[in-house]
Length: 469
Image 1 (cartoon, rainbow, N blue to C red):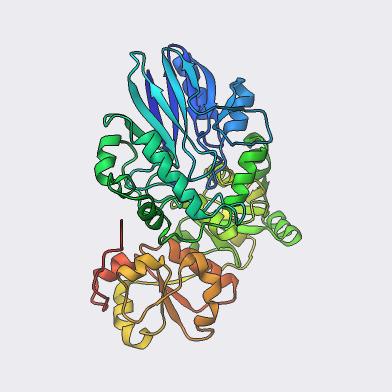
Image 2 (image 1 turned 90 degrees about the horizontal axis):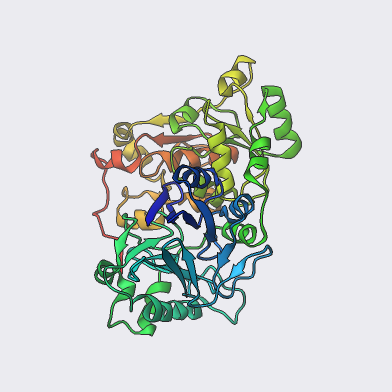
């Protein structure tokens, strides 16, 4: 038996490849399925099953395409109702894979169809669980994503989660390995550990939600307390996972169309496409197409696209580093953004070579902000999350989180210059691009963000550890 975790840092997502005696199963695959097909071919095994732990909200799964290419059935747990052919497993149903078995444990709570898959090895020993969003390392899946009516509240779902953990997962042996669907950085939980694999025994010690003496009422309160608003694109991804989607090769064919500067401009004007610049913060600051939006590939690219653009059908045209166009289109498709209509051939250099206008973002060091602090004391905008700001911030800085930047426009000066910063410079450059598209051209971005600020003499509040359960 071989189990491989295929972890994608941008999405903080874990897919799994399991094979035994010539047969393989994939759990929660990503949209692009070629890596799984290549692994199976290399190992000389046939993909027999495609298991889905639930209808994912934060990414589009590769289950439909993988099933079409291999003939392997898609397996969901009880209560699932996809629009395509799938095998809806019964609670406790067992699937043979080579010399091992995989048992479906219905674990509703995060969603009503959520199912954990228990691997039992060739000796009959309970070896590992693939928990999806039911159980993370250090946390459990948020219970507010599957509410369909007033008849099913997040407190109801949290109660289901409590029962699932106590009745299906906690009775398992301590040495069972826990393989979750997500790690730290995912919006599907609150306080996940940075590790991506652990034992159930250690989780009993580390995970607040698995306390032996916890009552259901305490569990519900702790799990529902402090939940941030889920990203608006989540329901759109759920819909695609339930109803199906275009093959990624079709998406790539459209998205990888090279456009001359004239063609690029025409598409932008005719379709109101978002001009998405996916280069580095430095490259964007140095020179970019006016009204383009920056969300760089070298960061939490796909989640921020989903958070800020929201509509998965929004037309997009790309300004990408040479050779990374396919990566950009692929990563957009992972979160359901399939309407990429091409990329600027030759990039910003080609645009500028034709004498077209470019824009820049003024950037200054933390040392410069230190020198300017008294003059700009009330014109410093921190675009980090509220929890980061609450922990520690520049004295008198205003918190205008990137995720809600458009709701803070009235707080930002129209004429006077102001400083913006995040933790390291990625999010503040996204914010700068959005503000520029809204008519604000008087910002100064702090290079290196709060990390650089902490190394200066700029006055900051004392550190206060964020509340964790």
